[in-house]
Length: 346
Image (cartoon, rainbow, N blue to C red; front, side, top):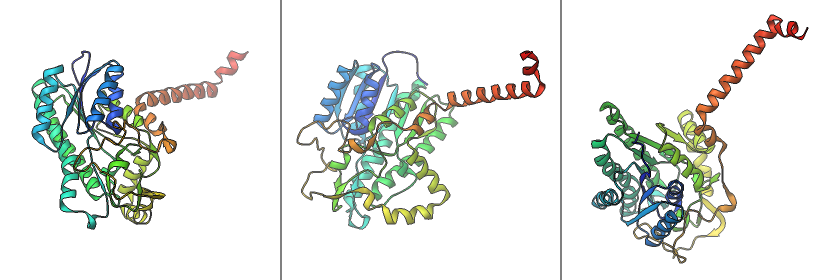
């Protein structure tokens, strides 16, 4: 998938906070050279400092992924600084928590431009450099919402659906051309990130991820795995599996269920939203304390591990292990039926 060399050169969009920040740490621990792309200056500087403390090197580039020329220029700067890009991770996103009929056209367009077109522009910049070398990996950070839309996030759900279709189309083209470039999508569950405190919201109460909630490190470990193993797609968290396959089997039941639970499950009960707070739809919000890091305010409710994810990432070894156990059981059964154990006992 990539030529063997160290350190890896990795680009992460949305690197200043949340899942992107956790991904940056995951690669930095292994000494990667990282191009950090995001809008928030405080978050970028915090991420850059963390990379260096963990043993890597970083180039912090404050850009808006909704601008194709800025993404292209950032890719060029990363390669000028560190050399050929091995891995490109598209994670940047924004959302608006609002009924669709209350959203403006400009808000919907902005969410689409960042969350969907940001992935398109990132993929384009990566492929422009990877195709001539015929190597590299692109990871799209997706969501269960790429398959199962929920109320109050119509623009975000639409963007994630679009990423899914876009990625499948490009993957087919790479296969047709016999390219050795990896293109994968990691579908995530609800994650404890700062987006719920800085995303634009018209909800009466504070926004929250739909439980069960996972820590961003769960996602980061899966994304790192996806960058180094040939997987078409990864589902992370049992809730993601249930949402995706439930929608395939009984989408009407999903509509009915979410119509009744989707509003309350995305809000923290008895915690009114502050209508005057800042949001990051148009401008970055680093918060009053500056760098917000990877975690949101739901640490006490968030899971640090996922058994389903562990099984997903280790399925090859599990298959071999189960196969060996079955083989041993078969051999013992045949020996017992042949009477050989009794003969040996005499």
